[in-house]
Length: 88
Image (cartoon, rainbow, N blue to C red; front, side, top):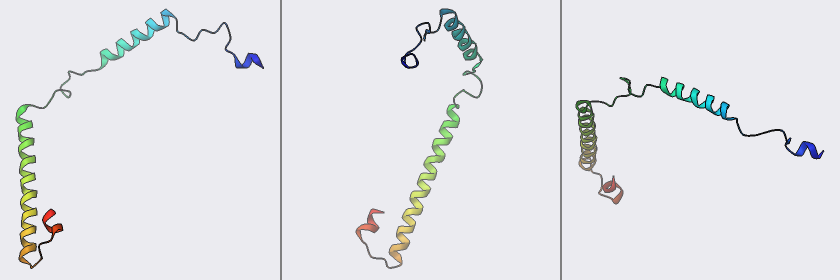
């Protein structure tokens, strides 16, 4: 039973130099297949980024204007000013 608890003395858990070299070669070949500089990996042009920022800003302004319009309509309908109404 003691032999089943211990590792065999002939077993070597580390890989040989030849195996490690072959694994490194395979890794290098697979990394070479990756195309980080392809047309899909390029960042967006500045014009597109500016357009996105403008649209996000306009959407935010629209949301803010709708919120204020709702608040004004609420006040015009006779709602009382409370701390919860002001915090929204």
